[in-house]
Length: 258
Image (cartoon, rainbow, N blue to C red; front, side, top):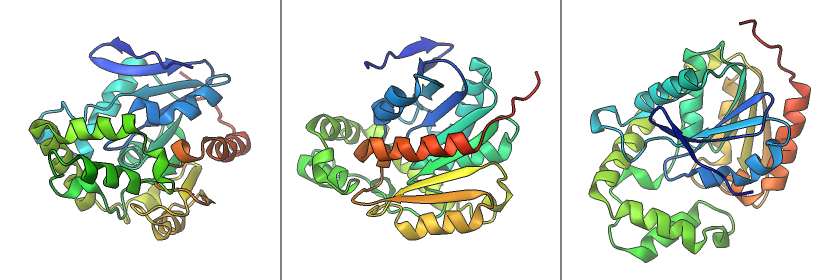
């Protein structure tokens, strides 16, 4: 399936399938393509929506977790979405957590994979080495258990981003905002069914982070995928989709009256 990017109301997004709504949020160096396997699988029975977050374009004073949450709020309002299953990877998970706490009535299920919000060891915390392709390649490969998952296309994409001063400044601002914003005290208030899917070999948000999310979020289930790094939906899409499918089946949504 080729993902068709739509443009409307100042937003770029993917909107595939029909049925219950699943909203997918990508991470700091992420892209819409990160969720390709999820869209392929679930758009047969669900409406799968992915906004392209304005990480590299947003004004510097808004470049942070709260600015991205405001963007998601505006997007959800524009698209008139309700009764959502909200999925977030890495920084996208962090944004999903804050969004859920602020807009609880809209989110019926929460799915986090390699989420920041408690601890992360990321490339964004310091200025990436500009013009050093091998360094960027090494850091992108570090995201995955199998370095071959870091395709040349993916490395080229990140290399282009790190060669832009304007983009780098925003990446650093957002990464520092995420690292400062520890959610340990807040996430105990999340009461929607929550699924945690984690790579057992995640070096950026290690397994201990997943256990801590599981301990702090009351109604949460944790699943690990072996031989898997920071982006399980990319590295093991079939296992990821199978775990997610079972979770969706056991947590049916009661629609909100409108």
